[in-house]
Length: 265
Image (cartoon, rainbow, N blue to C red; front, top):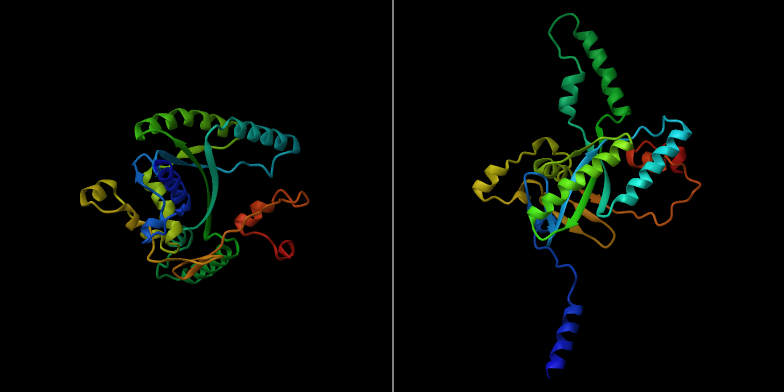
C-alpha cells in the first residue's frame, strides 16, 4: 500500500502545472524580496543584480581593433560561470526636461520670433533623430545562495571580475540600486508615465506598502500569441537561426529602430 501511495504522489505531482495562474497584476511581477542595494530575490534562494554598462565604440574602430574587441568579449563570456543576460532597453526620454534644456524660452521681447524659428527647427530634429528614445544596456546576473548575506558576499567578489572584463572591452559598468531597478520595471510596465515614478524604501517599510503597487499597471491580459498591457499589445519574437549574410549591424539597427525601408523589405 505504501508503494502505491508513493507512486500516486509522484504521478500527481507530475500532473500539477509548473506555473500557477496569477490572480493579480502584482503576481505577474516575479519578485519575492528586494533590497536597497539592488539585490532582488527572484525565486527561492535565487538572487539577481543588474548593472548598467556603456556601449563599446565598435563600428568606428579598425578591423584589427574589432577583432581584438571580439576576442576580449569571447574571453569574458567564457570566464562567466554564472547565469546572466543582456537587456537593451529603448525607453522614452523625459521630453519635458529635454525641451527645457534645448529650447529657448520666450522673454516677451523682439527676439521671440527668432526663438520660435529656432525651436521649430529643434523640434523637427528631435522627431527625425528619434531623440525621444534613450537606449540603455543592462547586464543582469543571477546566482543561487542560501540567504541574502551569502548572495551579497558573492556579488561583491563577482563585481571585481565584471569591472575588469568590461574595462578590457572599453566599457564601464555601474551597479543599479534597488530604486533604480524598480524604475526600470516601472518604465516598462507603465510606458508613457515615466516621470511619475516615485519610491522610498523607508516610507514603504514604515507604511507596510507593497512595492509592486508602485511599478505595476492596472491590467495585463494574455493571449495565445501576444499580451495586452492596457492600451498596448506586445509580442515576443525568437530568432532561431541568424543568417551569416546579414550585416553585423542588423541587430543594432533593429534594436534602435534605425533600419531603412529598403533594408526591412
